[in-house]
Image (cartoon, rainbow, N blue to C red; front, side, top):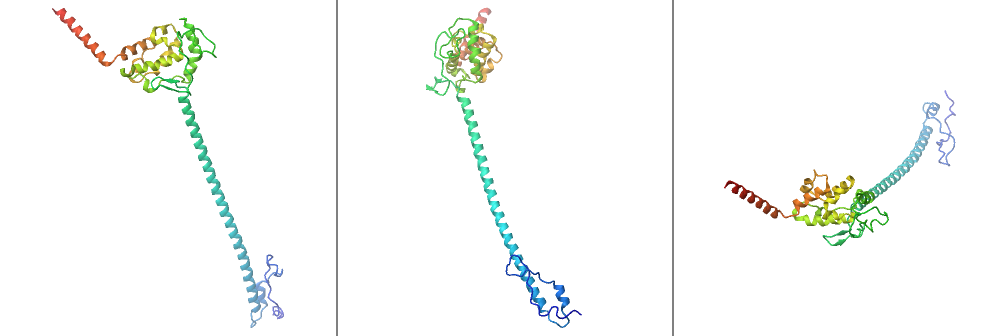
Length: 293
């Protein structure tokens, strides 16, 4: 039998907890050892006290861990709020950048459409200060090549030569045409007989700006131009038309013939054309009647 002195008169031992400076550094004895030391009939008061100390020690540990968990959860919530704020800020920045990009594209598109429109609109009587300046009117317009720095201010003199027109057109005007410097508004494009005069005025402005306005009075002068220069004129004519007039000259590749066809078909009101057809019909009928006599 184990010595009865073991387990008797021994003060309860406290659990070791470094966080509690009032506790002893000695660990609590194992429960199994205390139970084996007790003899039959003895009370277990010492065992109970040790168990109480164990329970208190575990409670302190659990309370400490619970506090740490609460602190960790609080830190996680703070981090989550910070991340959400950062995401919201990034979305706002992205939205602002997208808006600025769209605004820049819209402004660039608007500038590309309007910066090179004709300076003067004869139909509204307004002046567009943002468009390139129109060369002053000066006849004759064709002539030899001139200094590029003064070509817009002093159109070349008409010599009737093919080379003069070629230098004027291909050296500067074709470059401007590639940027669509001279355009005709849609409402001024030839579409029917009723707006023929409006179309002529709009085309006259473009041709004057190019220095070849005498083409309107004498379309055959374009026959002396080079193939590339005639192509430029043909492009100008086609771009100034819409619907049926454009289709009417789609098969013509000579500017003078195309212009004459447009003048012949659209320069006179439809009523006048009907009257001519009636007169021709009556003349043909009367001629046939005379032959039958």
